[in-house]
Length: 185
Image 1 (cartoon, one colour):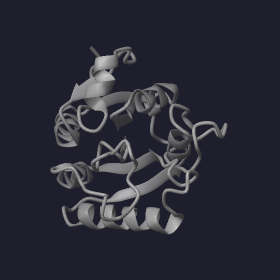
Image 2: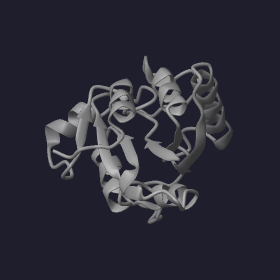
Image 3: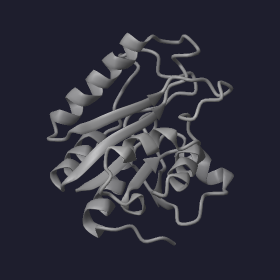
């Protein structure tokens, strides 16, 4: 069994500095659903780990979050993909939780469901430094996409050693499916 963990906003769907607050605002990045479909068909379990502080900020409620995820799952399943598990952190940046990225709590919770998988063989795809930092802390391989906040993240520098950079999730999925393992720079 193989596992890939994806961030949501900026990787699967378009992101906004004003937060994605409604189902209508949740719009998939072209090629993302197909990429998840390819990963699924290649034998990967696909999980999502996403910070959703909009809940604690009261920008949207849990029902709206679930509706966004239902929309995401519907689009992914239409392309032959399947998202096995969605972990989300509902906390704000000052709440002191163990799950909010850059902490590794969500990733560790997912990894606990896969005791036979070595975290070193798990790719985590994100668009921000905190996604990459949580991947490294959990012992996984960090992959950065240029979509979402990816270009800003690259411009700021300071990427963890071994970070691979891809144009988008479709590009990263092609690499993951074709390489079988990730090579560091």
